[in-house]
Image 1: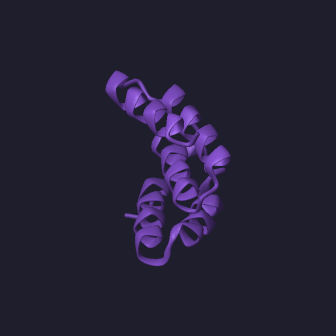
Image 2: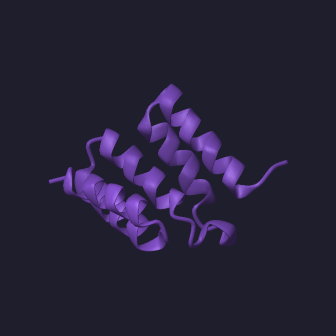
Length: 87
């Protein structure tokens, strides 16, 4: 069934096959969807794409945003560690 989460997963897979900029293009198309507004995996995925594209300042911001959205303490710690790796 089509859904914004399925579209996000497609963008992630697409980035692995065709590079982070290709994934960014797809994820930016769905970023305003209300179903993804408070969904931590969206900024986490954007952070990863940006990190792999060498856009570290932007990646840091996305990882920090994802950490604020998650309710899982370990996931938040992982995302903040990814943010710190952007320095």
